[in-house]
Image 1 (cartoon, rainbow, N blue to C red):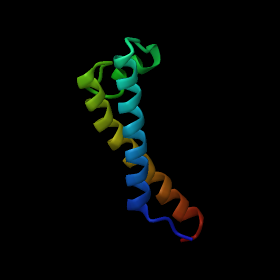
Image 2 (cartoon, one colour):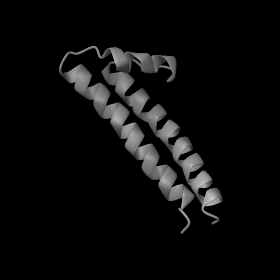
Image 3 (cartoon, one colour):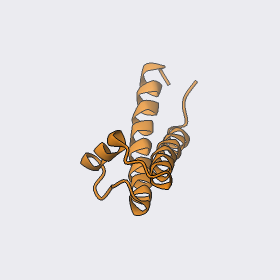
Image 4 (cartoon, rainbow, N blue to C red):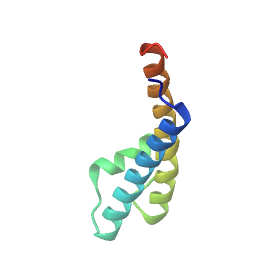
Length: 82
């Protein structure tokens, strides 16, 4: 069975982008600072634990998840003989 690389990459991108966005919104809405989430500014240019940072993190998270999903699907297809 082959994985559809585009569909898998989109699913991973949407999942990871949504996770970063929602986690940041949760922290901002309830007044937390989130030490772990603040570390994302080392990887995602322009990210911060703020409302604008949630959008930036969501976009970067989508790109990150898309690329990661594409690589995972490609490796799966290579190793599964597809």
